[in-house]
Image (cartoon, rainbow, N blue to C red):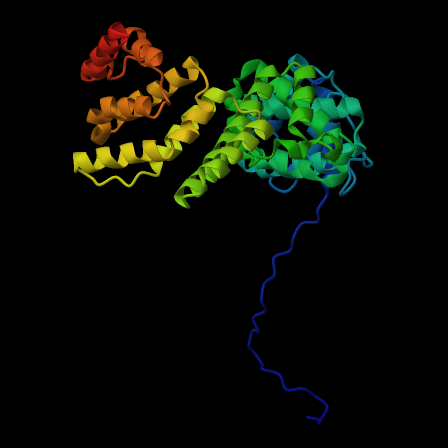
Length: 411
């Protein structure tokens, strides 16, 4: 054997590692086959669904392509919404009329497909995300159809479609700045609320992490509470406007309560606290009745209660009333507000067992500090409308009321 010849192992089989040979991808042929099913059935979605169920098409490989055909009538070019080469059909979502009645059958049709092939939900997400991120490439009428489809998809609880798939892709700066997102989301809200409640809509927005960030749908020039109310009121979505205004109101109340809690805990000067309240009332346009409620809550929250020692609790509560009487007096400027303060005291004493017996003493202290007028106390005693604990509190307050009436008679 020459030195150049390689040795061989006679009679020995050398094992070679097997490799999986992937079939070449052919989305064009798949798209053409799906398009042909639409054409063969003249766009009758029930017949199309049956034909697809009985077909042996490879949906697990070409799921994105399938939904491209459903939405646009054929295959789209990679990374775009532009039509690619190949057959097309005229029964797509983009080609139909922009009404919920016409688009609803497409949603029901997709629901049927997903029930048989639930793995396709990921492909639906992929295609919707891509289309929503590229809304500017669609005509205005086409964007409206996509908004209607999206609203109906959630209304019909389309299998497993997560809200974040819809809302997060919309927050691209170029889409928001052009007003495209606001137009889309407005159409979405209007269609969704036809069959669903505002609570249902808020639930979807929460799951999509958008409930706290609705202004992000607005171009920067319109991104304000006033802009929000003006836009959606004009579109007839008054319940959404009222919800947002209530939410803003609650945030302002919370911020004010937090600021007052800090000042009272730090024992700030009463004049300083009064100035803070007045400024926040002016900035946030808070109603007087809410101010009275907040003031009482904050003052009582700051009391250091001593557990079961009734007398110490009474002393602490009365000391707090005396210390901050000027603050209460500044904002209890009429009988209606004074009566509201009495109701607040009544509710707190009713809900907190350790305060149940303190009601008459607190009312007496508020009277002594000129926060409550005699007429207010007598009105509550004779005609009070809050029933919670009323019978008990009326009986407890009776000696003080008798004293007031006797004093009035003597005068």
